[in-house]
Image (cartoon, rainbow, N blue to C red; front, top):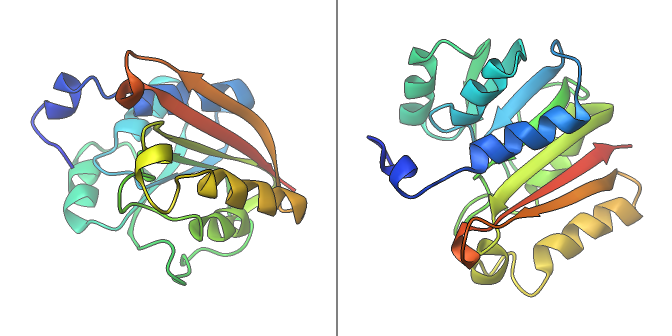
Length: 185
């Protein structure tokens, strides 16, 4: 993770896009939200600015969680790994929303995390995944349509339904942001 303003210099906007898209689908400011791959808390900050009240952070890095903790924006903070057969410590149907901005990148989260997302989000809840579009081509676990085919397979099996695929261009492929919004069935 980049620190000391380096994300701003790279014009990273995934956290802003994720919060804006989430707001289109989730009007209740008391919805229980899990910010997965929360890093230092950029998404949480955006959500708090928009008035959301109940946000938890999940990240695999103790260092990132401690930076997020200092911002005092999260109700609960968890150091946990997602995917690879690892199960989150949450009960089924715990959250109204999972938002994941920047967790899918080179060597990042894999599609096996989707099952855990669906498990911990209540039926009717949303899963918002925002990532740089370039990773759909560059990451071997995602490219050639693999990531989207895995998403479509879960839809065919009745676990979730794609509500929106949003692409925002910020100049060049590496600056394009893609957001997938799924509703849990």
